[in-house]
Length: 238
Image 1 (cartoon, rainbow, N blue to C red):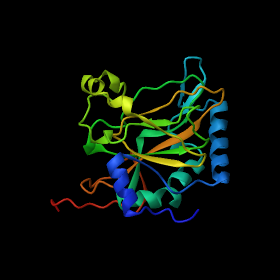
Image 2: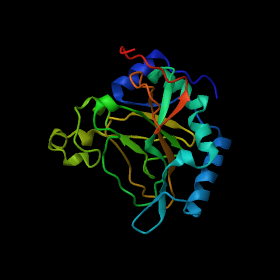
Image 3: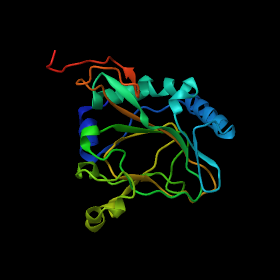
Image 4: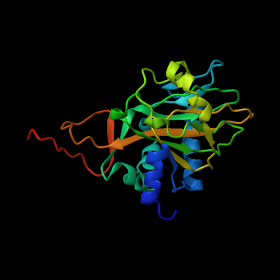
């Protein structure tokens, strides 16, 4: 897979733009194994799931509690090596944000949203694309630099925020097509959404939230999964 470490220039670009295509690419074998595990749980309607208006399963929640391949993938060096340049050596995955696989079906539309409302609780959201994502099947859209916008009061429907709407920020969105096996890292504060799928095919992906170990917490967090390094405590009360 080659060297997946990030250069200092790419780290700067992520900080500046709020998103970055990660250099590592999941192998074809890994992508097919992930797809098979997801499709099996979709066919079996293994809860917890989210259904669309027609009753079809379009999302598998609590992904990391399912098949072992999901944990293996999110803790693989392909993902963690570039993330270490952004987050440092001690990395956790959150279990109560993202942690799902999605089937973007024909006709699905989405609103612009953030993954967190304030910068003090930031994540690096990583989207693993298990099918090629294009303009036609609804690739991710981002508003570059919008992670620098102040905190908002809601996660979804950002067009309803008067300041954002009046500033015309959402009209500056750009599409980010990605190949199957590709990974996109986004600052959780960036304005983004899934595009509309105008094909008769799905667009499958899995989404995971990573962050640095919080060095000011001295107890185990049950909704955090350590995937690299160690949990350190650096508070000045001890």
